[in-house]
Every structure is written in structure tokens, then in C-alpha cells.
Image 1 (cartoon, rainbow, N blue to C red):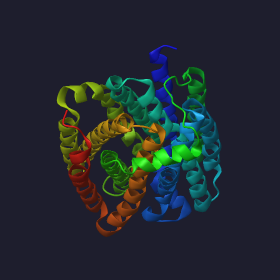
Image 2 (cartoon, rainbow, N blue to C red; image 1 turned 180 degrees about the vertical axis):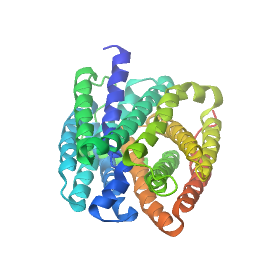
Image 3 (cartoon, rainbow, N blue to C red; image 1 turned 45 degrees about the horizontal axis):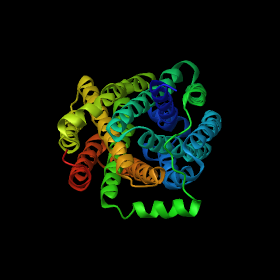
Image 4 (tube, helix red, strand yellow; image 1 turned 90 degrees about the vertical axis):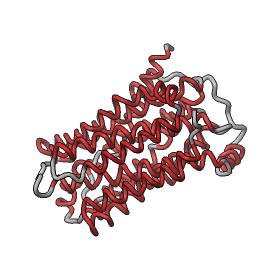
Length: 384
């Protein structure tokens, strides 16, 4: 199969996860009103999914090291359809959180294994660029998953919006089944026990641990920023509707535009200088959201989204390249750190919002960017 078709399949696999992962984010204020809870409580619909991902990611990677990449991706995409539909029929917050948790269980076998597939099926010189294409698709999926429920909530209700995201998931599944070829470079682990031993060995690799710290910080910031900005913009003086809040996530498209070029940028500037520059710009974008102006807040969110996607694309490709064996489980640990960071970001973001509203959320994001620089990219990324 032509390489461009493989890239299309990779893109749709990534989009299928992220069209579901953050789908409630734009309608959180609406959900909080319907279920009569506050911002910290309704954020459980995000935390439940990210926590489920963090709990299972390394183990699904170990399974894929035995069963193969394509098989695991296809089965998981099919299974994801079930909770994606049932979320729309949740009668209460408890049921909604349960189905969101089950959604999270289905996601690591898709994207963690897809990243491992990229690391094995493309040369190292091309893997970062392909990961950029994948990350771009996840950005578009994340945008679509947010804007559909937000816009459709006005016309047919938030439940109809969730069913629309399930329909997109079905389309992604059909594309991947058709276009994704079986892996050719995959070396099967001898047994689940052998795969588990490889998985444990990743925790002794300091460079991988540093990259995992970066992943933790990246999603921490995304969740703390984009979950609670909805409450800022839904209140005075902005008073945005659910549809308008969904439209705000068009800023994610900037991340989708820039990430396919990350391979060239890393080659030209070196991974470490490039990412340190990205983090500096990221901090400026986050600070811009403190301005009492909707256009400036949107500009700050766009900058933060683009920088976050660039950092994410570089770190995920570095995991696949760095792992000496058991690429799926190595990526699985990265995914665990990434989504554990998201869960912590949602929780601490809720506390920060309660104590200091939006400035509190901005403060913890800036603090995490400092942590990424000092404990992550300082040790993880080679200078060239």
C-alpha cells in the first residue's frame, strides 16, 4: 500500500480517539446546569476518561507487543463505538461518568499502539514527521469533538451532539479497516511475561522517564487551560453560549496546521533548542489569556494550542525512537504519564478556579511549564 495511504489511516486512527476524548469540554457549563453541580464536580466527566487511560495504557502496550499492532488498533476502535453511543443516553451524572470511564479504557489500544506502529514502520528520520501528521489529525479530531456537541447543543441538544461524535468515530473505524496495512517491522514478544519484563525495564531508562515527565506536564496544561476557560467565557462579561464556546476550539486547528512541519523544524534547529523556544512562546500565550479582551484571550488560546501540539508531537516521537525494545509498552507508559497529568490538571485546575478563578488556573499552567523545562526537556532531548 502506498505510504500516503498509510499516513491517512494513521491520521484517522488518531482522530477517532480525540473526537471522543474531550467532547464534553465545550458543554461543561451546560452539563453542570442540567445535573445541578459545580465546575469541580462536572470536571469528573473529563477526569474519568483520562484516569482510565492512565491506568491501562502500559498494559495495552504490552498486549500489542504480543498480539500485533493492527489487530489491537482495529478491535479497540470497534469497541470504542459502544460507550461513545451510550454516553448520549446517560440519565444522570453518575452514568455519564461511568460511560466516559469505559471510553477511556478503549482509547490506549488505539493511540498508544498507533504511535508504536509509526516508530517501527518508518525510519527514525521520518518518524517525527509522521508523528506530526498523526498529532495534526488528533488536533483536528479534538476540535471536531468539541465543536460538534457545542454547536449541536443549540439545535438538537447535547445528546444529539454526542451521537454525532459517535458517527464520526464509525467513519474513522471504516477508513482504518480499509487503509491500514499489517505491520512489517514488528517483532513479536515471545509471551506476555516477556513483554511485561520489557515494560518494567522502561522504568529504568532515565531518558524515557524525563520524556514521561514532559508528557505529564503537556496534558496537565491542556486540561487546566481548556477545561476552565469555558467557565471564564460563559460568565460575565463575555456570557458566551454553548455554541460559541464550541466555536472557540477552532484554535485547535492552528495546532493541526503547524505540527506536520515539526520534522523539518527539529532537523533544522535541533530538538532541544526548538522545544525550549516553543515552551517560551507557550508561556506568553497563556499569559495573554489574562487580558480582559475576548480577541486577546482567543489569541492566547491559539498560541497555547499550537505550542502544546508541537511539544506533544516531539515528545511522542522521541519515545518511539528512544525505546530499545517493547515500543508499545514504552509508549504506553508515556500515555499513562500524559493522561495522569490530565487528571491532575483537571483536579488542581478545579481547586485553582475555586480559590482564585481564572488567574489561579493560569498560575498553575505557568508553574507546570517551568517544571517541564527544568525536569523534562533539560534531560530528555538531545541538543541536536
